[in-house]
Image (cartoon, rainbow, N blue to C red):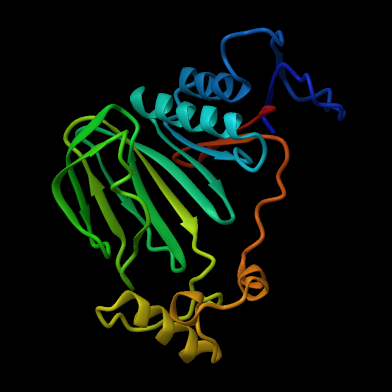
Length: 239
């Protein structure tokens, strides 16, 4: 990495003497992830990729999502990514194109009290000039359409976009044709590529469902990989 930062209260590994280190007190207002984001913004980076941000304490995961919102509010594109998870934030007046991820659901939540002028396009459940509030999960569990990237925009507010691997979806992620019925769509997908029916179609056993679940990232320490054009700055910090 180009830089190590944090309070290192739970880090016991060695640090290469050639790597710059910014050490902070344990008792502080900023989390280590927030410190990493602020440092990146101060250095002029505006495309931030945060790795290893989930899978531990729930409060830390929520704090990291709020940190992604902080970056978005301050003009940067930021995302948390794992093998089976992708989270980003969108502010009013912005538009995001989310690449098609077969086997993933896509949810859009209001982070602010209200998001107005919300448009969800090229998704199974479309929305045009709608409204989302943070007290009702209207935008949960949408689905990509085959071969199409999702287009999301809003006029006012702050939204969180979350893509999750859907374990009941076909575990081989094969190509298949959309026929207008999502349950039959999944059934056709699984039968055509592996001869198995998905949970949504026939209700597989708990063991079958567990076998289809993708493994989560094994990254333990939070790392924010920050990109700008062809330059990349790595910030390693504790959660």
